[in-house]
Length: 152
Image (cartoon, rainbow, N blue to C red; front, top):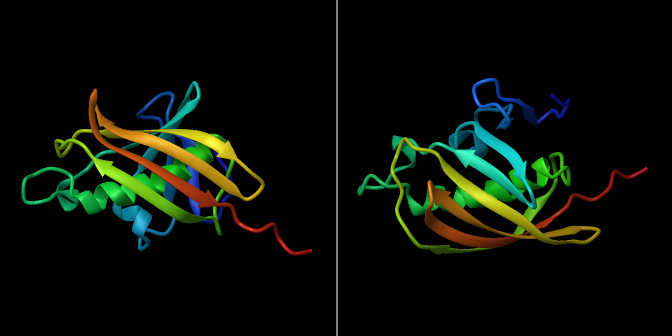
């Protein structure tokens, strides 16, 4: 599956069956810093996966809190894309709240499990957990405002 979005590539990842690869086409934008992200829907949750590298680490060789916050923010959009609620362009984060719970290992995948609590005409209310294996690294909730419909 591919799509013609001018900003993001979204296609079945041949190295990870069952996962969709979701990446920004412009490597100079922030999302590209997180690396290629994978998404899939698992029941009522969307899973968004990244592999933190050294560039995402802190001095304790764990994922830096800022990188985790960036991942949580982007995971809201990756989840909405996986659910088919958003494509790209124009949607914005209204709020993001996070609680850091544990530390991660660099070089091993982390996954945001995201669920939609409510969708209105213009807003998505979501929450999730960031995990590495079964260890919870963080919990978060956020609100995304969908882009305005195109003017006719």
